[in-house]
Length: 448
Image (cartoon, rainbow, N blue to C red; front, side, top):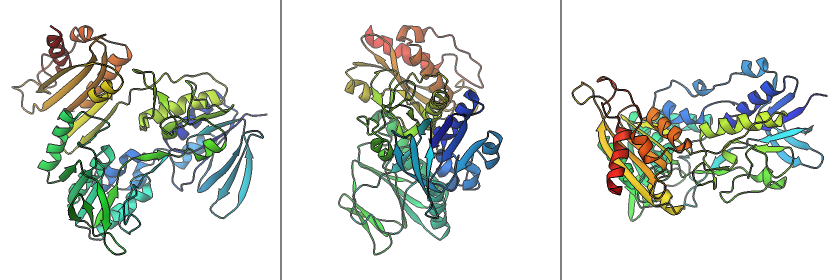
């Protein structure tokens, strides 16, 4: 009898899990179940559709219906899984018509993702408040702008919040960002690096308010503004980008252990604490490659790696997920940003005494036309001299440098080894001294 694999969730982790399971077991019956009508799309692209870089939301669909047919995957949409019976190894579903069904499984993968969090702000039930998670969310925001919105407020200055704020500016809206913490990108950058990003937004006309929360949404039935601190700020559109919360209810009901970050606990094979149930993506906790402690990095890159491992193991193969660094990048206006590993602040929180190497350089030879500024900050463990983190803000070539730093951390490269790195040079593409190497040298001077 063919192995029956059910995957709850059909985005990055779920679809990659299905693909991996199919490669491992060519005869398995693989079923994907999603609450949504459209699946297999890139959530990360939604702000860039709003900003006009991508024509329409449907362009974000990575896996068309033909993909599922080609790989013999049974896709069920607009259906909710309401219960998991771990003893009988069945799930119960409810579709949009109200029909219920019981489906048996041999292996179950939870790729249930996460949902946007709206803080308990007075007036949060008003019309004109949006989140950014699904294609429908993006379409609603786009429709509101087309309907004549002239001003927008974004609550939250993480990556999604800033990408939406950039999209508002690109669509001609007067834009304000309000962040409760004292800096932008608080989970990604240290304050000195985040200051560069904030200054760029302010240059583009965005008002950035940090260290202040929104206490009330103003208006009758519809949003007309917010109260931030002691100030009233008018707006036609309000986007809340204050983070996401794991969808772990099904896992908890099934008896799966939940971790400190409210994510589903897994081992290196993405197995939960319940036999034959796996978890992957935004709902699953993993381990930091640096601290070896649990982390919850809700990133597309982590989700697809989770999915690949979970799918292989659910299909009877063997694969492991060793951990992650939380590497991430983005482009905000004409500035690229990236980070990997620990920030200086996070290193201190984990008991690491940080040694910092930072430089401001150019992306090409200084005399070559088009050379752009780039700032690199490296974080080393002062005791072991191991590289534990890196942050870059610059005009170009940020992503590949972040990737290089990620490789260096994974291979446990030390300060002195990074200083000896053999790098390439040509005037149109890079400086004679690679800025990452130069940053390591500045750290060594602090030791001497």
